[in-house]
Image (cartoon, rainbow, N blue to C red; front, top):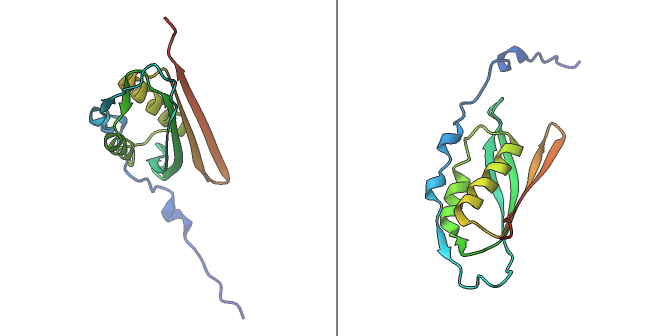
Length: 141
């Protein structure tokens, strides 16, 4: 004879984890270092598989692999400052597409590159994964 198990799902209806708003993203921590080869078209690629933010609706974590690709003009992005910046998204409630574009906007404003692309491969939740690509190209003068 099987034992019947009853689960009370009603206790999950109003659960919501606290999230932080975008004002907690540490843009001010970002720094650059001078790039000594501005005449070269050097492609810099910075990958990480440790990016997290949270869904603004549920507060559940979103995990992503982020790849930052850029061609510097006069500045490189200082790596430690970038790590702190990306980590500051950890409890921020932000949609995946918005996070990807926000990273692009913040890093372009910082480094003023010739070109930059942010690729975010978001882990599946509920069977759906998301890939978001945002790009910037400096206008030729």
